[in-house]
Image (tube, rainbow over all chains, first blue to last red; front, side, top):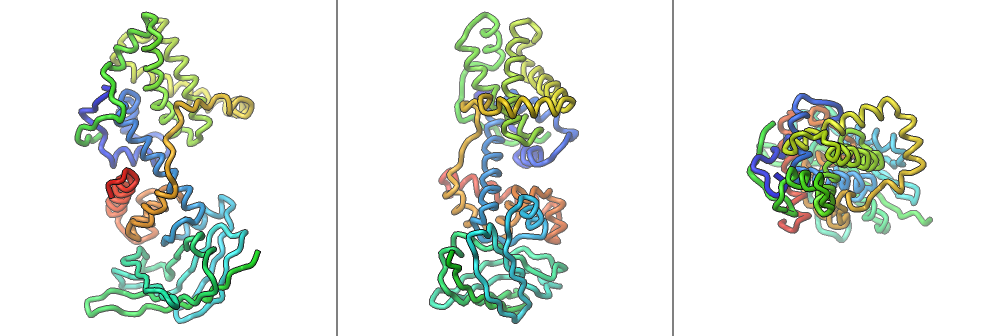
Length: 188
Length: 189
Protein backbone atom coordinates (compact mmCIF):
# COMPACT_ATOMS: atom_id res chain seq x y z
CA UNK A 1 0.00 0.00 0.00
CA UNK A 2 2.79 2.38 -0.81
CA UNK A 3 1.22 4.39 -3.58
CA UNK A 4 -2.28 4.96 -2.29
CA UNK A 5 -3.76 4.66 1.17
CA UNK A 6 -7.37 3.54 1.31
CA UNK A 7 -7.61 3.98 5.06
CA UNK A 8 -5.37 6.90 6.02
CA UNK A 9 -4.97 7.66 9.71
CA UNK A 10 -7.26 10.40 10.94
CA UNK A 11 -5.28 13.70 11.10
CA UNK A 12 -6.21 14.29 14.76
CA UNK A 13 -4.99 10.78 15.69
CA UNK A 14 -1.78 11.38 13.74
CA UNK A 15 -1.16 14.60 15.63
CA UNK A 16 -1.95 13.05 19.02
CA UNK A 17 0.40 10.18 18.21
CA UNK A 18 3.20 12.58 17.30
CA UNK A 19 2.78 14.85 20.29
CA UNK A 20 2.42 12.20 22.99
CA UNK A 21 5.51 10.83 24.69
CA UNK A 22 5.59 7.20 25.74
CA UNK A 23 3.39 4.30 24.72
CA UNK A 24 -0.35 4.62 24.13
CA UNK A 25 -2.96 1.88 23.60
CA UNK A 26 -3.41 2.72 19.88
CA UNK A 27 0.30 2.90 19.07
CA UNK A 28 0.66 -0.67 17.73
CA UNK A 29 -1.91 -0.17 14.99
CA UNK A 30 -0.71 3.33 14.09
CA UNK A 31 2.98 2.40 13.96
CA UNK A 32 2.45 -0.71 11.88
CA UNK A 33 0.35 1.34 9.49
CA UNK A 34 2.96 4.11 9.29
CA UNK A 35 5.80 1.66 8.63
CA UNK A 36 3.88 0.24 5.70
CA UNK A 37 2.41 3.39 4.22
CA UNK A 38 4.18 6.11 2.25
CA UNK A 39 1.09 8.33 2.16
CA UNK A 40 0.51 8.47 5.93
CA UNK A 41 4.20 8.52 6.91
CA UNK A 42 4.65 11.36 4.39
CA UNK A 43 1.82 13.28 6.02
CA UNK A 44 3.38 12.75 9.43
CA UNK A 45 6.80 13.89 8.17
CA UNK A 46 5.18 17.07 6.87
CA UNK A 47 3.47 17.61 10.21
CA UNK A 48 6.71 17.04 12.11
CA UNK A 49 8.54 19.51 9.84
CA UNK A 50 5.80 22.09 10.36
CA UNK A 51 6.04 21.64 14.13
CA UNK A 52 9.81 21.98 14.03
CA UNK A 53 9.45 25.17 11.98
CA UNK A 54 6.99 26.66 14.48
CA UNK A 55 9.38 25.72 17.29
CA UNK A 56 12.30 27.47 15.60
CA UNK A 57 10.27 30.61 14.93
CA UNK A 58 9.05 30.72 18.53
CA UNK A 59 12.65 30.46 19.78
CA UNK A 60 13.60 33.39 17.58
CA UNK A 61 10.67 35.51 18.69
CA UNK A 62 9.75 35.77 15.03
CA UNK A 63 6.06 36.54 15.51
CA UNK A 64 3.86 38.45 17.91
CA UNK A 65 1.92 35.95 19.98
CA UNK A 66 0.04 35.68 23.26
CA UNK A 67 1.90 33.23 25.48
CA UNK A 68 1.55 31.69 28.94
CA UNK A 69 3.86 31.08 31.91
CA UNK A 70 4.70 27.60 30.54
CA UNK A 71 6.14 29.25 27.41
CA UNK A 72 8.38 31.48 29.52
CA UNK A 73 9.47 28.51 31.64
CA UNK A 74 10.44 26.60 28.50
CA UNK A 75 12.41 29.60 27.21
CA UNK A 76 14.25 29.80 30.53
CA UNK A 77 15.03 26.07 30.47
CA UNK A 78 16.45 26.52 26.96
CA UNK A 79 18.69 29.31 28.20
CA UNK A 80 16.93 32.05 26.23
CA UNK A 81 17.09 35.56 27.60
CA UNK A 82 13.62 37.05 27.93
CA UNK A 83 13.20 40.75 28.65
CA UNK A 84 9.94 41.38 30.50
CA UNK A 85 7.95 44.54 31.13
CA UNK A 86 5.20 44.15 33.70
CA UNK A 87 2.74 47.02 33.39
CA UNK A 88 -0.37 47.71 35.51
CA UNK A 89 -3.56 48.94 33.85
CA UNK A 90 -3.12 52.67 33.24
CA UNK A 91 0.65 52.34 33.61
CA UNK A 92 3.59 53.49 31.50
CA UNK A 93 7.01 51.98 31.03
CA UNK A 94 10.28 52.94 29.32
CA UNK A 95 11.42 49.99 27.25
CA UNK A 96 14.10 48.84 24.87
CA UNK A 97 15.58 45.70 23.35
CA UNK A 98 19.26 44.78 23.26
CA UNK A 99 21.35 42.46 21.16
CA UNK A 100 21.51 40.01 24.06
CA UNK A 101 17.72 39.65 24.30
CA UNK A 102 16.19 36.61 22.63
CA UNK A 103 12.57 37.39 23.50
CA UNK A 104 10.60 40.34 24.82
CA UNK A 105 7.22 40.13 26.50
CA UNK A 106 4.79 42.67 27.88
CA UNK A 107 2.91 41.42 30.93
CA UNK A 108 -0.26 43.46 30.90
CA UNK A 109 -1.96 43.34 34.30
CA UNK A 110 -5.74 43.45 34.44
CA UNK A 111 -8.93 41.99 35.77
CA UNK A 112 -10.22 39.61 33.12
CA UNK A 113 -12.92 37.94 35.18
CA UNK A 114 -16.21 37.51 33.33
CA UNK A 115 -14.68 38.41 29.95
CA UNK A 116 -15.51 36.07 27.09
CA UNK A 117 -13.80 38.00 24.30
CA UNK A 118 -10.85 40.36 24.55
CA UNK A 119 -9.35 42.44 21.74
CA UNK A 120 -5.93 44.10 21.75
CA UNK A 121 -5.55 47.49 20.09
CA UNK A 122 -2.09 48.96 19.42
CA UNK A 123 -1.84 52.68 18.70
CA UNK A 124 1.41 54.17 17.46
CA UNK A 125 2.10 57.73 16.45
CA UNK A 126 1.74 58.12 12.70
CA UNK A 127 0.51 54.59 12.06
CA UNK A 128 -2.98 53.14 11.61
CA UNK A 129 -4.55 51.35 14.57
CA UNK A 130 -3.69 47.67 14.76
CA UNK A 131 -6.29 45.33 16.23
CA UNK A 132 -5.77 41.73 17.31
CA UNK A 133 -9.25 40.30 17.82
CA UNK A 134 -10.21 37.63 20.33
CA UNK A 135 -6.91 36.94 22.04
CA UNK A 136 -6.74 33.92 24.35
CA UNK A 137 -6.66 34.87 28.02
CA UNK A 138 -7.62 33.05 31.16
CA UNK A 139 -10.16 34.99 33.27
CA UNK A 140 -8.18 34.02 36.38
CA UNK A 141 -4.72 34.85 35.06
CA UNK A 142 -4.62 38.50 36.09
CA UNK A 143 -2.34 39.30 33.16
CA UNK A 144 -2.04 38.97 29.40
CA UNK A 145 1.46 38.00 28.29
CA UNK A 146 2.19 39.33 24.81
CA UNK A 147 5.45 38.23 23.16
CA UNK A 148 6.60 40.78 20.61
CA UNK A 149 8.08 40.22 17.15
CA UNK A 150 11.82 40.68 17.72
CA UNK A 151 12.67 41.62 14.11
CA UNK A 152 9.99 44.32 14.26
CA UNK A 153 11.19 45.64 17.63
CA UNK A 154 14.82 45.72 16.57
CA UNK A 155 13.89 47.85 13.57
CA UNK A 156 11.76 50.24 15.60
CA UNK A 157 12.92 53.78 16.30
CA UNK A 158 11.97 55.91 19.31
CA UNK A 159 8.22 55.29 19.55
CA UNK A 160 5.34 55.64 21.99
CA UNK A 161 2.87 52.75 21.69
CA UNK A 162 -0.39 52.72 23.58
CA UNK A 163 -1.95 49.28 23.98
CA UNK A 164 -5.60 49.00 24.90
CA UNK A 165 -7.35 45.86 26.05
CA UNK A 166 -11.03 45.95 25.16
CA UNK A 167 -13.62 43.50 26.43
CA UNK A 168 -16.36 42.81 23.89
CA UNK A 169 -19.66 42.73 25.76
CA UNK A 170 -23.35 42.81 24.93
CA UNK A 171 -23.47 46.57 25.42
CA UNK A 172 -20.36 47.22 23.31
CA UNK A 173 -16.68 47.59 24.09
CA UNK A 174 -15.34 48.12 27.61
CA UNK A 175 -11.81 49.34 28.31
CA UNK A 176 -10.06 46.85 30.59
CA UNK A 177 -6.77 48.70 30.63
CA UNK A 178 -4.46 50.99 28.71
CA UNK A 179 -0.69 50.50 28.76
CA UNK A 180 1.91 52.91 27.42
CA UNK A 181 5.28 51.72 26.13
CA UNK A 182 7.94 54.35 25.42
CA UNK A 183 10.45 52.52 23.29
CA UNK A 184 14.01 53.68 22.81
CA UNK A 185 16.34 51.71 20.55
CA UNK A 186 19.54 50.49 22.20
CA UNK A 187 22.75 51.41 20.43
CA UNK A 188 24.93 48.26 20.57
CA UNK B 1 -7.55 4.06 15.28
CA UNK B 2 -9.78 6.29 13.17
CA UNK B 3 -9.39 6.74 9.44
CA UNK B 4 -9.70 9.69 7.09
CA UNK B 5 -10.50 9.88 3.37
CA UNK B 6 -8.11 8.04 1.03
CA UNK B 7 -4.97 9.95 0.14
CA UNK B 8 -2.19 9.56 -2.40
CA UNK B 9 1.44 9.71 -1.41
CA UNK B 10 3.60 12.42 -2.96
CA UNK B 11 5.59 9.88 -4.95
CA UNK B 12 3.28 7.04 -5.93
CA UNK B 13 4.96 3.83 -7.03
CA UNK B 14 3.26 0.80 -8.49
CA UNK B 15 4.96 -2.08 -6.67
CA UNK B 16 3.79 -2.94 -3.15
CA UNK B 17 6.48 -3.23 -0.48
CA UNK B 18 6.00 -7.01 -0.39
CA UNK B 19 6.86 -7.35 -4.10
CA UNK B 20 10.01 -5.30 -3.60
CA UNK B 21 10.94 -7.49 -0.62
CA UNK B 22 10.62 -10.65 -2.74
CA UNK B 23 12.72 -9.12 -5.51
CA UNK B 24 15.35 -8.05 -2.96
CA UNK B 25 15.61 -11.66 -1.75
CA UNK B 26 16.10 -12.72 -5.36
CA UNK B 27 19.05 -10.32 -5.64
CA UNK B 28 17.39 -7.39 -7.42
CA UNK B 29 19.46 -4.33 -6.42
CA UNK B 30 16.98 -1.84 -7.86
CA UNK B 31 14.26 -3.31 -5.63
CA UNK B 32 16.60 -3.05 -2.65
CA UNK B 33 17.26 0.62 -3.40
CA UNK B 34 13.55 1.36 -3.80
CA UNK B 35 12.66 -0.47 -0.60
CA UNK B 36 15.34 1.50 1.25
CA UNK B 37 13.96 4.75 -0.19
CA UNK B 38 10.52 3.88 1.13
CA UNK B 39 11.27 2.29 4.47
CA UNK B 40 14.16 4.41 5.72
CA UNK B 41 12.17 7.66 6.17
CA UNK B 42 9.37 5.73 7.90
CA UNK B 43 11.83 4.15 10.33
CA UNK B 44 13.45 7.54 10.95
CA UNK B 45 10.02 8.93 11.80
CA UNK B 46 9.53 6.12 14.33
CA UNK B 47 12.90 7.07 15.79
CA UNK B 48 12.01 10.75 16.03
CA UNK B 49 8.77 9.93 17.80
CA UNK B 50 10.38 7.64 20.35
CA UNK B 51 13.85 9.15 20.77
CA UNK B 52 13.11 12.87 20.06
CA UNK B 53 16.63 13.20 18.71
CA UNK B 54 17.40 13.51 14.97
CA UNK B 55 20.88 11.99 15.27
CA UNK B 56 19.57 9.01 17.24
CA UNK B 57 16.72 8.60 14.74
CA UNK B 58 19.26 8.48 11.90
CA UNK B 59 21.24 5.86 13.79
CA UNK B 60 18.12 3.79 14.41
CA UNK B 61 17.30 3.98 10.73
CA UNK B 62 20.73 2.62 9.77
CA UNK B 63 20.55 -0.27 12.23
CA UNK B 64 16.96 -1.24 11.46
CA UNK B 65 17.44 -1.12 7.69
CA UNK B 66 20.51 -3.35 7.91
CA UNK B 67 18.71 -5.82 10.18
CA UNK B 68 15.60 -5.79 7.99
CA UNK B 69 17.49 -6.48 4.78
CA UNK B 70 19.56 -9.18 6.50
CA UNK B 71 16.35 -10.66 7.89
CA UNK B 72 14.80 -10.78 4.43
CA UNK B 73 17.86 -12.46 2.91
CA UNK B 74 18.06 -14.94 5.79
CA UNK B 75 14.43 -15.93 5.32
CA UNK B 76 13.30 -14.54 8.68
CA UNK B 77 10.43 -12.60 7.10
CA UNK B 78 8.11 -15.48 6.23
CA UNK B 79 5.26 -13.29 4.96
CA UNK B 80 6.54 -10.28 2.98
CA UNK B 81 2.99 -8.87 3.14
CA UNK B 82 3.66 -8.39 6.87
CA UNK B 83 6.97 -6.61 6.35
CA UNK B 84 5.75 -3.54 8.28
CA UNK B 85 5.10 -5.72 11.32
CA UNK B 86 8.62 -7.19 11.09
CA UNK B 87 10.14 -3.69 10.77
CA UNK B 88 8.11 -2.47 13.76
CA UNK B 89 9.33 -5.38 15.88
CA UNK B 90 12.91 -4.63 14.83
CA UNK B 91 12.51 -0.93 15.69
CA UNK B 92 11.22 -1.85 19.14
CA UNK B 93 14.01 -4.32 19.85
CA UNK B 94 16.69 -1.85 18.80
CA UNK B 95 15.23 1.01 20.84
CA UNK B 96 14.80 -1.26 23.88
CA UNK B 97 18.41 -2.42 23.52
CA UNK B 98 19.61 1.17 23.28
CA UNK B 99 17.72 2.16 26.37
CA UNK B 100 19.56 -0.60 28.20
CA UNK B 101 22.88 0.55 26.79
CA UNK B 102 22.22 4.29 26.67
CA UNK B 103 25.73 5.31 27.60
CA UNK B 104 27.31 3.13 24.94
CA UNK B 105 24.96 4.54 22.29
CA UNK B 106 25.83 8.09 23.23
CA UNK B 107 29.50 7.36 22.90
CA UNK B 108 29.00 5.81 19.46
CA UNK B 109 26.85 8.74 18.32
CA UNK B 110 29.42 11.24 19.55
CA UNK B 111 32.10 9.48 17.51
CA UNK B 112 30.12 8.74 14.36
CA UNK B 113 26.99 10.92 14.46
CA UNK B 114 27.90 12.95 11.40
CA UNK B 115 28.73 10.00 9.14
CA UNK B 116 25.56 8.16 10.14
CA UNK B 117 23.24 10.95 9.04
CA UNK B 118 22.23 10.05 5.48
CA UNK B 119 20.96 13.08 3.61
CA UNK B 120 18.53 11.05 1.50
CA UNK B 121 16.36 10.18 4.48
CA UNK B 122 16.47 13.54 6.23
CA UNK B 123 13.16 15.24 6.91
CA UNK B 124 11.75 17.93 4.64
CA UNK B 125 13.08 21.45 5.08
CA UNK B 126 10.76 24.41 5.38
CA UNK B 127 10.92 27.95 4.08
CA UNK B 128 10.94 29.69 7.48
CA UNK B 129 10.29 33.13 6.01
CA UNK B 130 7.15 31.81 4.44
CA UNK B 131 6.17 29.99 7.62
CA UNK B 132 6.57 33.26 9.54
CA UNK B 133 3.97 34.87 7.28
CA UNK B 134 1.69 31.85 7.58
CA UNK B 135 1.96 31.83 11.38
CA UNK B 136 1.27 35.55 11.49
CA UNK B 137 -1.83 35.04 9.33
CA UNK B 138 -3.42 32.68 11.87
CA UNK B 139 -5.93 33.99 14.37
CA UNK B 140 -4.49 34.95 17.76
CA UNK B 141 -5.92 31.80 19.37
CA UNK B 142 -4.60 29.51 16.64
CA UNK B 143 -1.14 31.08 16.83
CA UNK B 144 -0.98 30.72 20.62
CA UNK B 145 -2.11 27.10 20.54
CA UNK B 146 0.39 26.23 17.77
CA UNK B 147 3.27 27.84 19.66
CA UNK B 148 2.34 26.26 23.01
CA UNK B 149 1.98 22.88 21.31
CA UNK B 150 5.24 22.80 19.40
CA UNK B 151 7.53 25.10 21.37
CA UNK B 152 6.33 24.73 24.97
CA UNK B 153 5.39 21.07 24.20
CA UNK B 154 2.14 21.37 26.11
CA UNK B 155 -0.66 18.83 25.70
CA UNK B 156 -4.20 19.85 24.82
CA UNK B 157 -5.14 19.33 28.48
CA UNK B 158 -2.26 21.54 29.67
CA UNK B 159 -3.12 24.34 27.23
CA UNK B 160 -6.78 24.09 28.18
CA UNK B 161 -5.82 24.54 31.83
CA UNK B 162 -3.69 27.61 31.12
CA UNK B 163 -6.24 29.33 28.92
CA UNK B 164 -9.43 28.21 30.71
CA UNK B 165 -10.69 26.40 27.63
CA UNK B 166 -11.91 22.84 27.22
CA UNK B 167 -9.38 20.28 25.93
CA UNK B 168 -11.78 19.53 23.08
CA UNK B 169 -11.79 23.18 22.08
CA UNK B 170 -7.98 23.28 22.13
CA UNK B 171 -7.86 20.21 19.86
CA UNK B 172 -10.25 21.85 17.41
CA UNK B 173 -8.22 25.09 17.37
CA UNK B 174 -4.98 23.11 16.99
CA UNK B 175 -6.33 21.03 14.13
CA UNK B 176 -7.59 24.16 12.35
CA UNK B 177 -4.27 25.95 12.90
CA UNK B 178 -2.28 23.09 11.40
CA UNK B 179 -4.62 22.75 8.45
CA UNK B 180 -4.29 26.47 7.74
CA UNK B 181 -0.52 26.42 8.11
CA UNK B 182 -0.24 23.45 5.77
CA UNK B 183 -2.51 25.06 3.18
CA UNK B 184 -0.59 28.34 3.46
CA UNK B 185 2.77 26.61 3.03
CA UNK B 186 1.43 24.73 0.01
CA UNK B 187 0.22 27.98 -1.48
CA UNK B 188 -3.50 27.31 -1.12
CA UNK B 189 -4.15 30.19 1.23
